[in-house]
Length: 499
Image (cartoon, rainbow, N blue to C red; front, side, top):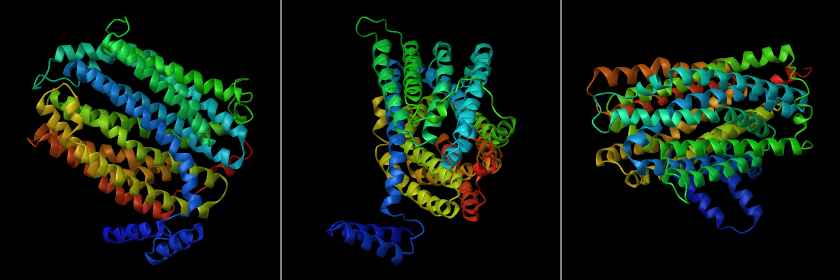
């Protein structure tokens, strides 16, 4: 397979030298036929469509993660304890964020198909559902963080840590959490608006809002963390204030644009004239969305538990994984954005009743995602030894972070295939299957392995981390079978046409 890809790349390089659009198209067709890749390589119109959708998402996610990386580096300059305290709190915030994504995505499956079928009433109802449940979820997490936040942070701190002051780390984490709680509601509302805009093909506006927000976050992080331009040096509290401020800015942008461009967003007309959601549709959303929501909850909690298992090896591991995640998240935008593209494109095709086209383009999207992840993975691996040197921490932490980054780089194509397969199943509304494919697999396979290895063996943390990532190879095999069999091909919008 690798040899075949090599020869394809060589022939493509020859084609580029051929003048004329017609020669390019003929040569591309010849390559696809010669190497049997016709089902995996799309035409120019296909890739143009993908780029129009995926590039704004990649740009937004890349800028968001790049600024997040700069934020992390700024906090890392203050010391290991502040960086670790913020990292632990962000692990808790991650659970909330993923739960919100689950709510938005559950209703968004139907929203994308409603848009594909031209049913704007259906989109309006799914939007209302997102808003209502998002507010309820925010209230629930505020209660949890208020009464049990300190205990949750302490679960990541252990006396056996070889580096850092645990009491200081706890205090930094608590201070950061208390401010970040203010930003929960605007985050939930932004996801409801931005998700619906993307489902209707409006990806540029959420991207623009995200860019402005992260720039606001970056500027005020610099001012408030280090006390520039006469402001007090607030450290981790300043970082939290800047993040909360940026979320309100992002919310203002997407809300104002959505409601001031009603001709482009017909679902926004009459959105707040009552909040009625047809019972049949609400039940449909719950039927489709509940497994997805539970999947996201269990997956995010599972990720937090994995982080807690790693933390048993010491505070230096917490710091190293935080450094690795910071740069890996920047490169992960490739497969994450491609997954979003799969959900949008395939969802719209299914909603429009173009089932055969959906099956063909899904295979091409998955292949393209894996290819892009191979490139990004190699790039990540190549800088693994350089990035940790930026942080003001110990050599041991830097070496551990390097190993974690290298592992993520090597596993990137695996992540790309698994994520694309997941979004394929989700686009067709097969959320029960995605539940077993994603979070159930994590709790049955990945978590028990890491739990046992971290608590009952003396295995090094690098090997434990590697084994954890490689369990996704099993998911690759499962995902390949499910996607190939076409269990996800269905038109749910047609069933709800009368709503």
